[in-house]
Image 1 (tube, each protein chain N blue to C red):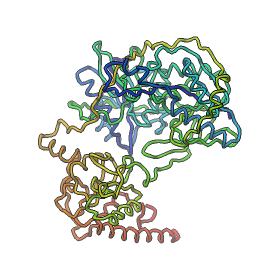
Image 2 (cartoon, chains in turn green, red):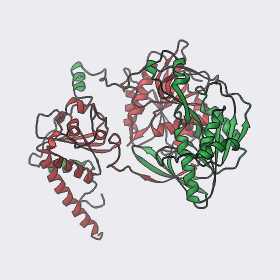
Image 3 (spheres, rainbow over the protein chains, first blue to last red):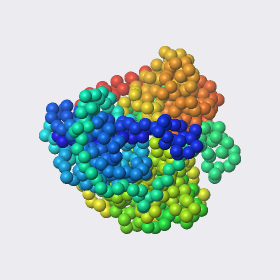
Amino acid sequence: MRIIVLVKMVTEIFFPSYKAASLKEIFDERNKRKKINSYDLAALEEAQQIKKTLGYGSIAAIAVGNEDSRKALQIAHSMGAEELIWINMAIPDPNKINSIQLARVLSDVLKEREFDLILCGVRSDDMATGFLGVALAEFLNLPVVTRSWHIEPAENCSVVWIYRHIGKGDQEVVECPLPSVVTIERSREIPRHPSMVRYVTAKRKISEIKYSLLLEEDNEFFVELSVSRTRPKKIFTPDDSLSAAEKMKLIISGGLNLKKEAEQKEENLSGAEKLYKYLSKNHFLPFSTEKNH
Amino acid sequence: MADKLFWVVVEYEDDQVIEPSLELISELYRLLQKRRGKLVALALKNDQVAQTNKVLAEHGIEQVIYFSGDCGKSAYKIAANVADLSKREKPAAIFAAGTIWGHDLAALVAAKLRVPLFPNFVEIGFDEQNRLVVYRTILNNTIDAKIIAREKVLVATTQLEQFNIKKAKLPKVPNIVEITKDLSPLEEPTRIITKIKADPKTVDIVNADILIVGGGGMGSRDNFQLIHEVADLLGGSVAGTRVARDKGWITLDRQIGQTGKKVSPKLLISCGVSGAMQLTMGLKGTRNLIAINIDKNAPIFQLADLKIVGDAPTILTDFINKAKALAKNRKEIDKQPDQ
């Protein structure tokens, strides 16, 4: 199975925004560092696990951007990727670039290559749009499955079974034909330790594709950056239509509506019986004496 | 592009519009109140259409477009329909709640329209030139990105728990449009094999459907074990009050209330919980509340759907015995051949 993993370097800021007077202070070299996107590391590890399950396969890592991106490829190599592709292009301000532009560039390069599976992190640690994988799949006209934490390949590599999160702790298993794009959550295996030797030798293995298009600020979407300011989260306020007394009652109850006094028709029932009856009536009991309910 | 025509893709849970969708609609209604704009909801047609229309209208929706074709709850198919419809109707912006489904859907719509996605916006407004502006935070919440869509449609999702739900001051009767045939009759390339429910013993209490909550009225650690037994019987999760945590019966991640978590289960049984405001503000989303307390004047009873006055450990012990006997009975009935 030919697996392609998209990797990128992200910016990590150490300086708290409430202390910052200007953007310059936040972007000061002492207050930030570059690291590989943690979700992309999970994608690299997933690629390794698929290869291990099948007993064969190849992993190619692709990074887009300036000289910094080479470091992401070095890390990818140190964690098992065999082929390293660097799409060398100037990005004036990585914080203003939108994923649709990157997806277009990547699809141009990937159209020329053969592959079975494209893996990428579900989002990046810095921009957190969670859009690149979906946009790339659309450009390449491939199926896409998001938020995967485990991928099981079929023996003949025609399909993969993808375990994905669907919220509230629930999961679903999706059968996906190949080739396809899958975005990876970082909740399965801890990525392996990088090999220092492979990290150093990676530089010689990087094949460079020069991309002449200069990614500039998109004129259709204006983006301006500023120091983040503190915003209140959702706060509870009673409805305007209520009277002052009702508003006060609602505030005192913490936002819960007071229930009207229900008529106690079955006074002779014990507490346990009342509880059982209520649960049974509202279908909360997993067992019941009625058959085939 | 139709100026100030905003679309909201509505999400349901058990045929009811979810809170994050209402948060989004309320915020957009607030924004459009002093401007001439139109708020349109896009929803799947379900069995509770009248109720859905009522809820959406109450929060300021003027038109509801229902998809009743063969799209199911598939984000893939709905996104294709929304994208196709938007090419025709040209809304200024398409919004969805920042849930997993909402994000997937918005990403697919944006990709089909070849525009960027701006997820988790924390603020929305208009600038001096009357252009729509959304703000989202990036780089670990240190930077605000101000985004203005100049020509193309803006596709965005909200940050969860960011906006208040408010009913509209002047609700209108919504205009209903039904799209009976899929605009994009696509075959979904992927297939769901199975769904795996979260284990109630390990699931985060914020996500639990059934919660058994114990308070100081349980008396001792041994009695608190009854809470675990009831949770096992009902397939629910265990939670507790601040008192229960202080006594070491539960851990911090299972505490409800002001210093704990805010929960929204379908069923919550509070046992030996008085119902102080610090706790009840964590119960706001509860649909069915059963209160068991020895003090008939406990504040929790004012909020309960079922009030049981009595000693919580005794009532739970009786309930466990009764439930176990009935469960055994049920197994025996199951063993009998069908008649």
